[in-house]
Image (cartoon, rainbow, N blue to C red; front, side, top):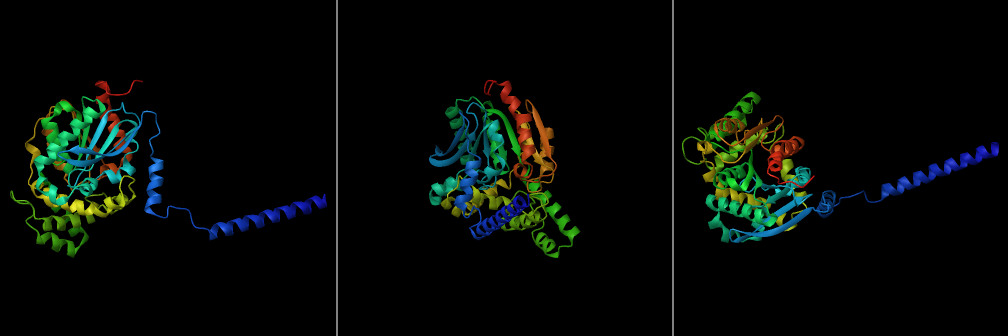
Length: 380
């Protein structure tokens, strides 16, 4: 028995020594990846890969409005209802951050991310000098109609869902007014209504935060652009940027966080985006803003008092980037076959990123039943 005990001790010591050697060797080796954007995006792409038998996973160009425009189409079952997301900005694309917020949606909808004319991958695809004269509100609305028409034909659907976010909510409202028969419902998020009034409310809220904070620099900047968003003239871009600088600083765009830095950084992890796309994504954003933002800042959609399609609004309680209180007031006045307002209590303007779980539940609870009643779902 003593010999057995000694042998056991020698064995244990050998195992300890071996473990120490392996640990030292592992410590000297290169740490686990990812070590580059390429590795990171491969990991994300593999994690979100569609593996179901009737799944859809497409990134492709579509001829819309006379130019090539990029879409990403993803879903677990091609028989699910189509959900087209109209991104904000103008030019603030959602395709390259959809890897973070969208995966759950794809179990219930075939989700389409579209980089609009002058934005994201579509900007990279086309000569800016050629498309610059076409960057008008009417052309963007016409592009939206063409995209919806293409999706209906491509997937054999009579109706689809359209989710308009911020700038995209203007396009969505116009689509809902002009083509209600194409929609299961219009879903508005960061909904634009009376834009000058929204701007005024955002300025006032930001000034209150700055005064409460004793922030002399912010107060001086905000006072320098006062009176802000008065009358019918567009707010100068320089004034808008000063207002947004401090509004973002105080969490009016992303609740309890500064601006959209995390969201902007997430763009670089997009599997759909090439290095060339990334190199131009913010150039594209600036291009779209320059061409489209001025007229947007004078829009008043509060005169729209009737929609002939169901209306769903997702509003961030703390959204001062596009006033959620102004949107809620409009919602109370507008008539629709059915309508629903969902408040996101822990969100500002980036609802799908700030509360992705509630976003998914809200889509499934409030939108999906409309498609089910229309028979636009897979058989049980």
